[in-house]
Length: 78
Image (cartoon, rainbow, N blue to C red; front, top):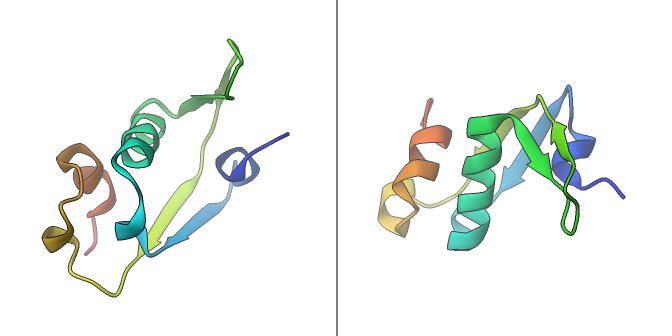
């Protein structure tokens, strides 16, 4: 079944409280944002995705130790 990113294909994905994402989730999402593609768990097929990502948090992004590569991709308009 399709996950949230695949479902958002052609639209917008909103992630609230982005500072709660684990390091592993940040790395995977940064890779998707960089390559515009994903692979479902257990699959060898790559799926192209095109979506807009909007993130929100009540906290200061810089103070939560987000991965630098992930922070670079989501902090276009802080």
